[in-house]
Image (cartoon, rainbow, N blue to C red; front, top):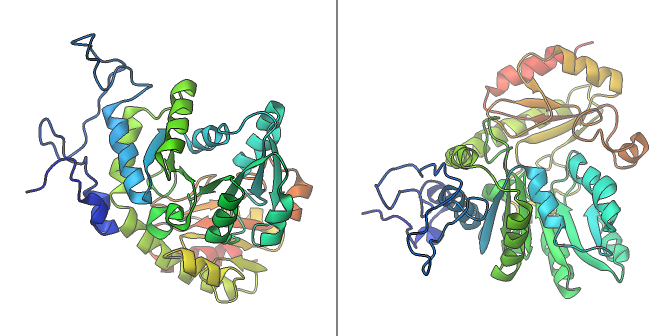
Length: 389
């Protein structure tokens, strides 16, 4: 008989963990769905023995279920749920103090770039952006005040691959905190903590939620000590995820594996088709033969993901493409059941100055395609007509 808070959950296969994660059955009623505790505060029956939860900013049973869920999936010690992906990233960076320095993947998500260059720089937290496919650049970027390394692999939107284990091991030798944004791969494809990373971040709005209906961020720490520090920041900043969103996210996460598998199959077919199209200048996808990071990616990840970027040749052609497609959403997000086509230069990476985007390979012709669950033949036919001059 299945018991609530099953301690054997960690020993199960990933697909089983997604459904049976230890708190999926309500201990009080046996309900098959985690209850939504829509309460801001909790009664103290005995002042000398305060309850586990006293105020929902500090802790809520629904959020706690989600936080233990993501910690289980990532193989970490502690999980934390935040009001958005950027809220999770911001909180992680606030582990640093004024005067500290962080080394960052150069073609990082535009929101992360904006945070570092327009907000945290005013708090005297310094950052250096490097091509993390070149380990020597990472080593050379270290300063006496460096305290952390922030990785994003595959990177957004050019899908460059960082050797996670090598960077994490170096960071540990240098006594730096290693952080990794795992949004594109999810814990189904890639578990950075098992490769030595200290802290993993997700924009759970994307593949984990999977339905374009929830805004959320998640953090998982490899150990309890770092977890206590993140907890203090989460409570002090109040950047918590609401209970309704926690419940929606847990519902979406239960189908993560089947969604990722289906989207990835289609993404590979789409990338291969785009590679042979005369109107496409270049295709970025780690599953393609010839991708410079393919071998490293295959060592550290189970699959290639569902995001394909490609260069339509010019900004004019890219904009025309975005106006002609009929199936995908033209939007700033990714990772949903519906396909989403995005234009980084004016959407996700608009915060980057044009010259910075160009230097990092984010051309005006670059578009990012997050492949959903539609039939791949329909997606290809739609793109074919949109690419036709």
